[in-house]
Image 1 (cartoon, helix red, strand yellow):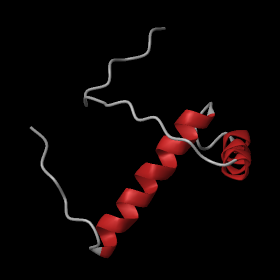
Image 2: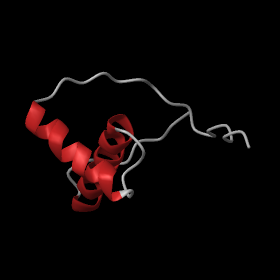
Image 3: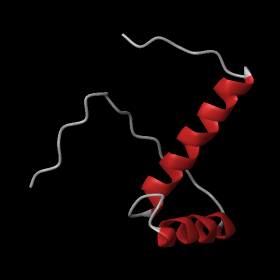
Length: 65
């Protein structure tokens, strides 16, 4: 079955990181809870971090057009 289309537009971001961070992301992928690859795991960590910063009031919610 085909993957459903994402209802929210996305933007691509390229990051560079250390071998140690890659090892941690690999551990997260191995749990099966953070996606199927390093990019998905990194994206999920970013989302969780942004959610936390929103709850703490460090970031303000933005409206999308």
